[in-house]
Length: 244
Ligand SMILES: C[S@@+](CC[C@H](N)C(=O)[O-])C[C@H]1O[C@@H](n2cnc3c(N)ncnc32)[C@H](O)[C@@H]1O
Image 1 (spheres, protein in one colour):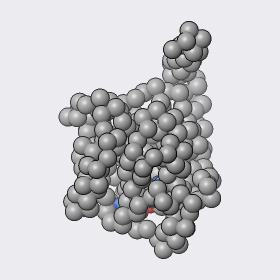
Image 2 (tube, rainbow, N blue to C red):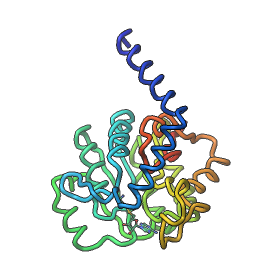
Image 3 (cartoon, rainbow, N blue to C red):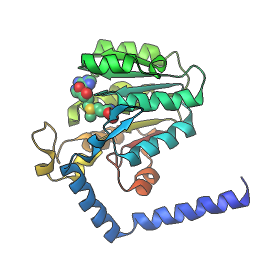
C-alpha cells in the first residue's frame, strides 16, 4: 500500500477512535436515534424501486463489506418488501460472476413476490418461504450454502432473543472464514421499551442479548466494533460479527 493511502487510512482510524470516545456526541446520537425510531425513519427509503427497511448508514456499511469480502452466496432472513434483498443482489451483480442471494421469509406477500420476481436483479435472487428456524428449511439452506465458497449471512427477521439465538445457531456454521454474520436491530437493546411498542422483544431480550449469549460459546466470531464506531447511526451496533 502506498504511503499516502496508508496515511489517509490512519487518519480515518484516529477520527473514528475520537468519535467513539466522545460522550457528548454519543448522547446527541442516542437522542437522534430515539427520535428517528419514533418517526419510523427506516421506512422512508427505496433501493432500485423497492422499499428497504434500513438506515442509509447501514446500507453503506453493507456496500463496503460486500466489496471487501466479495461473497458468492448471501443468505438473508427477513425479506419484507424486498428492498434489502435487491440491494444485496445489485451488489453481487456489480461484482459479477455466479453470485446469488437467498431470501427467507415466513410470509412473502404476493405483491412483494411479484415485484421481486419481475425486478431486473431477480436473476440473482432465490426466495424461500417458511420460518427461518424451521429445521427442514435450514437444512435446505445449508445444502445450498455447501455449494458455495464464500458465504455471508444476514439476520433481519423476527427480533426476539430466542428466535435470533436459534438463527445464530443454525446459520453461523454456514458463514465462511473471513466473512460476516450481521445481526440487525440490536438497537432495541439501547431503546426505552416505550419506543419498541407492542412487540415481543424488549430492552431486556432482543437481538443484542442473543448476540451476547452466542458470543460466549462461539469464539471464532467477534464484533467488528470499527463498523458501528464509524457509523454512529446504525440499527446494528454490536451486530457486525466477523468470522476468524
Ligand atoms: C424487518 S422486516 C425485514 C426487512 C428487510 N430485511 C429490509 O431490510 O427491507 C422482518 C421480516 O421478517 C419476517 N419474519 C418474521 N418472522 C419470521 C420467521 N420466523 N422466519 C422468517 N421470516 C420471518 C417478516 O415477515 C418480515 O417480512
